[in-house]
Amino acid sequence: MTDARGVPVGLAVAGANRNDFKLLQETVLNMPVTPPRADPANADDRPNLCLDKGYDYREVREQVESFGWTAHIRTRGEEKQAKRDIPGYRARRWVVERTHSWMNRFRRLLVRWEKKTENYVAMLHLACAWHAYRAAGVPV
Image (cartoon, rainbow, N blue to C red; front, top):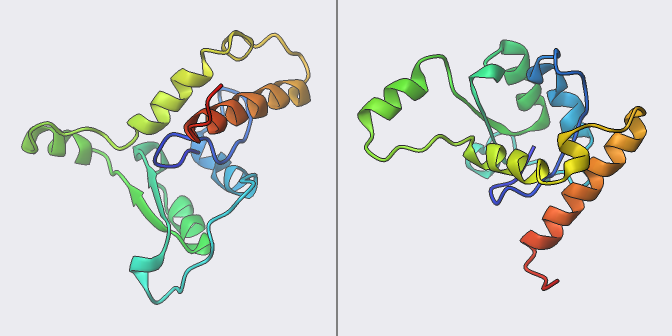
């Protein structure tokens, strides 16, 4: 999970054969700093969570609602329609895809050499910390 600048804010590790939507709660619970809970009555004050159509499940919408956030989840065919109707349209998930690309610059993450999950998670945390440091604009 990333913020609007692509800084990783949450992390969960599972096998490649596991659906992403099943890791939503674990990812949110692993966020070091969670957004403050907003007033449930005021929808404008709630944090937003943008997800692609792979998260278009009732279970996900309920989880996001229980976190006190507003879900922006694409339904099947909605993005294709927007791409056709809106000139210069860009998908919202490009920030996440860009962050994945940044993570793949770490060879140790691109090819998983670690056999223990704990070691792999430690390397992921190091890569996330590096990207957060760089996004803060601190000169190296």
